[in-house]
Length: 130
Image (tube, rainbow, N blue to C red; front, side, top):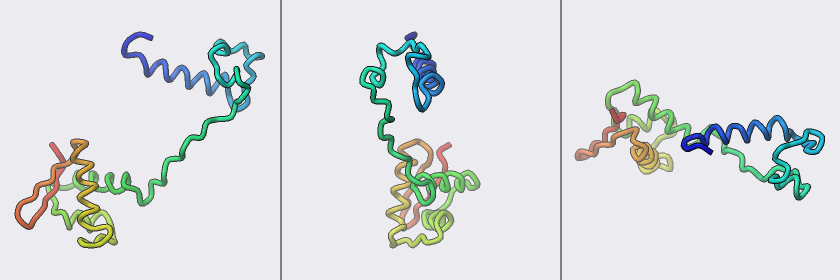
């Protein structure tokens, strides 16, 4: 495989699986060029591996991270508690979904290089990294 072309290879293999293999493969009739390397063909086990389902988006950390970024895109800077109340109706500074929970989300976003969190005295402010 040429350097830097792994995406092309992966797309080609997925296309082969989607078109040639299908849900009920007919390897011999189709004259599949990959039969000699195909584990399913060699073993006769064409069951799909267990693939975990992606968790629901509703109420997920991904959803709240998205809300934070969207809201910060509309403002230069926002205080921690104002942000909390704007992204979650049941935000309570000392509650289950309070400052600690929100700081965890912000820490992840900061690690990803998306936000800056500034603590100054009693006030914490948040902004998009620019």
